[in-house]
Image 1 (cartoon, helix red, strand yellow):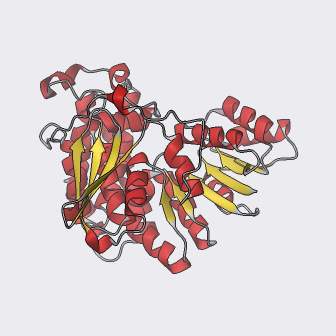
Image 2 (image 1 turned 90 degrees about the horizontal axis):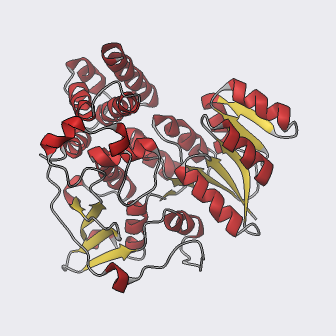
Image 3 (image 1 turned 90 degrees about the vertical axis):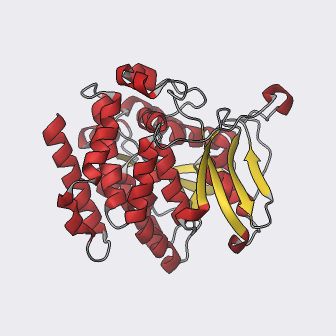
Length: 386
């Protein structure tokens, strides 16, 4: 029996992990989980899966769970996330499906007790990739990707020498506004942005897809996950989201990983690696039905957020933290309908160019420095825009 410690159980990825547990109850057990603010869904999960430990964001929600399920251990806040990541159980697997920089600390906690981390939380590597990958090497653990794009690369590189790779190519759907001229983005609404053409995802990542920031994050993730220079990581617009990534080798051979747009497939592969065992959950790809695939250039003029991400990782140090914090706050403000869609880009650019942060780029990158910069960026933006 494999016991899962699931960070972010009520989100899109977390919900699909629960689907996998339901399919293979003889293999998987939900030992511990965390959730955000969806207390009703969390109560349903406790009722169905009978975990040992539950972590809420708010103490009030934690107390409610404890009152209704007195035999369950309950925690809350960031300390509770670390408890979930290090929960004492047999054959533990830690799945980080959190959204935002809050995912960094529990990832490090899991690594430090010798656990592999199955990672869907982009921000862990965006802001702390240098530290996380060094820690993983120190403690002899693996960081296994759950993102569809990185799962594809992970599969394609399996058994191949990284020195033989000329480049990896990450595909992008183009998001909700891929067919809109840039000048029309000034009038788009939150509802427009949340209408993704290919995937069903949480609100934050759907907005990141529309701005193309999620693709920028994925370039940074790939840099750390596969230890490749940015010069060997490229991107392309692929509307169908059938090819999830490609690897081009030095001899010109190019391999693609193809599948339907269903996150349960990379989740399943990560947990069962290197097996590709049968599942009825995921619809099989019908190439005749697909008919043809399309590829287009991704323009940095059309999608400047992708350029900001490349700028941040090239500058290194705290700049990816600035990028992420500014983006998180800006997306939050957009979802609250306090700013326009194009203001997201404006806020991120302002933060990256703010000279107040230059002093933090001096010296070694540390977790306290990351947290200080993260907090300062958020305070500055919210003071100005809220």
